[in-house]
Each structure stands twice: as structure tokens, then as C-alpha cells.
Image 1 (spheres, rainbow, N blue to C red):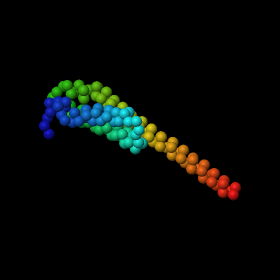
Image 2: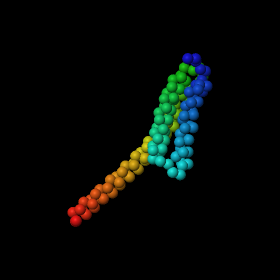
Image 3: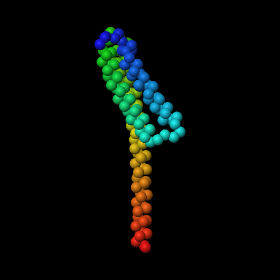
Image 4: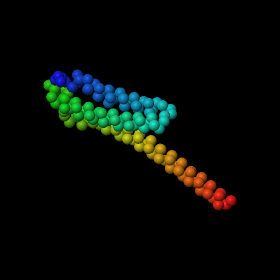
Length: 134
């Protein structure tokens, strides 16, 4: 492995930027722009946001390690200082939004399932009462 002068010149830095910014905002665009969207699609997009957050944390850890050994001080300011904590806010936001989306889908599904169960029970009771009356 060759020593890079700065992490800003490495492919993995730009990969992290692409994954961290382009994909989540593309997902937000899909979620907001669609007039009708299936529950499964929303669930997959929610899990995608959580996965993207995990990848972001992984890349941030790797870049912080790489920044510590490069001769450039520019990347040390961002990745090996207290400012590094602020970089974790974006993955935390994506994970929180993803969990919220997943929770919404599950809550909606469970409410609908409870309603169907109650309707089936009412139908079974009505049928049972009709049989007794006959």
C-alpha cells in the first residue's frame, strides 16, 4: 500500500462523500417525490438509510486512521481532531430517519393487522350468534 499525501486524494474519501450525501438525498427524493409508494419500498429505503449510516461510520473510522499517518495537516484538522465528532452527526441523522421510517411502516402494518383481526372476530361472533338463533 502506498502512502498518500492526504486522505482527500484517496478514492475511499470520495466514495464516502458519494455514499454519505448522494444516496441518502436520492432516497429522500424518492420518498418525498412519489405520490404513491408501497410499504415494502418504504421499508427497504428505511433499512438503506440505516445501512448507509453504518457505512459512513466505518469510512469515518478508516479515514481517521489514515489521516493520522499522512504528512498533510489538512486532513488531521478534520479527521484527527475534535471536529471529527461533528462528522458523526450526519450518519446519526440518517440512522435516526431510517429507524423512524421503519418504525412508521411497522406501526402502520400492526394497526392494520389489529383492525383486520377485530373485524374477523366480529364476523365470527355474528356468524356464531346467527347459528344459535336458528
